[in-house]
Image 1: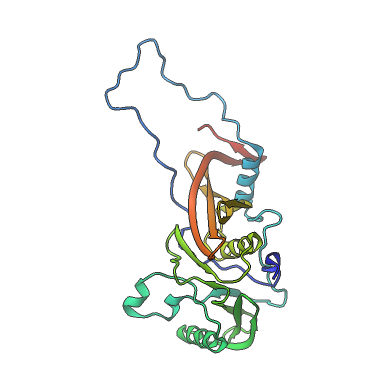
Image 2: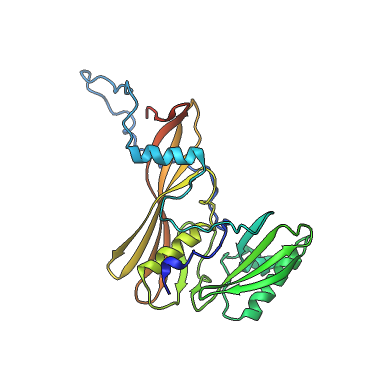
Length: 289
């Protein structure tokens, strides 16, 4: 199938990942050894008289984070909200932790998969029955990648709950752990393995993480190759509120690397750089730093 059509269906984003939407600082900087002497003729470094020059692209990224109304760039495939839903819309992939109890619930957390529709319905029913407000199953949808069980809460018939379950013939995430920043991201079983499929998958998964939240914005989503691997890198900016009127934007790469032979996917989260900015009545401005 065409990977770029992976998200043309009406899907809505809910985060299912493990990173907090804010917090976390940059790496420590190296310092001179204790007691090292400075030549008497060398003056101590001075703070810059003017703020450092920040590339226009970084300022634009910071502005989008501050505004919060455009979290992804043009061409990034995201799901649109169905116009038919007047109330609250909740979309989530069912996880092993939704079905686990006791010590089992403390293990790795990942999205479930099955090729059996009856199993997917059973999981959805168990999830719908576990909360305080039951939601009736009103329709069952599916494609080559997943099942979707659509429910309407009895307490609010204007709302909609969508349970999704990956098909194992498409993606098996049982080797992954959503609480970790790095490591296995699962096994893609669909063939052929293409860069377009990996791009669609990575952008789809992004929508179910806390990256799809306030204080984050995507700068770019780029595909590359590395030896026998396909690589999809989503570069994001994360706003870390500061003191004194200046905030820090941390630029981070969220990367999925897929083995082009067996479909095994590894994910990583890598700091790229950071810069300081502030929001002013006339726009975003750089800060000394």
